[in-house]
Every structure is written in C-alpha cells, then in structure tokens.
Length: 136
Image (tube, rainbow, N blue to C red; front, side, top):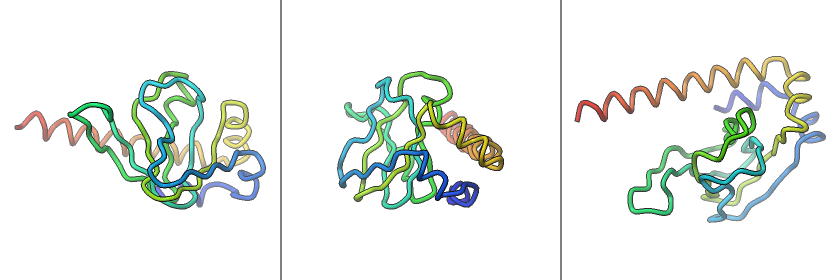
C-alpha cells in the first residue's frame, strides 16, 4: 500500500487535499454513515478497519499504515460507509473530497492505475477469505 504515496506529488496533494489529525481511539468513520463522501490517505500513524463494530460479531478487516488509503468506495460510488475506521495511534490523514479528487487524479496520472491495482488486490484477498470460510 505504501506505493500510493510514491504515485502522488505530495506537495501538490497537500495544497489540494485537507490534512486531518485524529487522536488514538478516535472513530474516524462509522459504518453506514453517508457523508462526507471522501477518501483518505494515511500520512502517519495507524488506523484499524472494522465491520459490525457495534455488535458481538465485529471483525477487524485491516490495519492501515502510512501510504494506505480508505474511503474510496464512498468517494466513487457515493454510498454509505462499509466499515468503521478507528485511529489506533495518533493519525494524520489527507482527505480527498469529491470536489478535489478529480483534479488530484488528473494531475497524478499513475494514481488511478495504482488505485485500480490495489483494489484488485483487495478483491483477491477477499476472494481468498471467502474460499477459506466456505471450506470450514
């Protein structure tokens, strides 16, 4: 995931994106929430991605480190959040909003390809998980 950072001009991105800082244990996004329809890139710190966070069957899906991103489904599909994201340490994020995302993608031509490649990797990982669960 760290390769996302290498695909963007961080100085340009910082001028167009919104820098947000959250303390450890802060709930950044809640599953099912609708706005903002933004995508985030982790600059520093760590965050955790959870599904079904508010019930006994919650599941940790990922740990996000610098270079990781989340929220892309809401940005591109304008649908409710599919997971809850919590800062596991103090975390600094760059927020790409629907208003600034297209400009950032156009000015960083490697970024759309990188996002697609990483999304494909996530689909592969989910397929593997589903396959493993179906064997149990």
